[in-house]
Length: 198
Image (cartoon, rainbow, N blue to C red; front, side, top):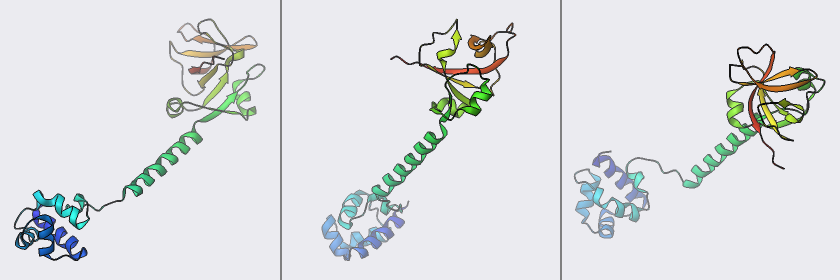
């Protein structure tokens, strides 16, 4: 912003404060003529802008044409935005929880469950058709599964070689690594395991 526009703001603020050019000049240590030169853009007020702002009760950004927004208003806006974002994440991150698959297919268990489980945001934002499964009845020869562990699975993501998959074995289900030679039907893709240590 050029000095002429800063001068206009000084004149406006001085009028609001009901000060003459001589009053303002005396308070900042310059003559009334210099204040006039500031207001008309003939001299640069920048070296005295801190003093001018202090005397006239305005923030520095006022003289550069930036409207002052009270910090409380900004804090309130940010707080409301964070609350909304947090609420959206909480609402969106609850996924169906299956306690057991014994005697059920995944789709049937999903239809019957009314329980939900909080899903990590990185899973929920990246994958669709996600569910949580208590792993107590699930076998695995390659993963260490403890009592109460929860697995996060997707039923819409196609398994690639090296992924951990949920397959049907006999009357139960098993987690194994997917390979080219795997002939078992992939029921779900394992995304993560939440370990319980209690």
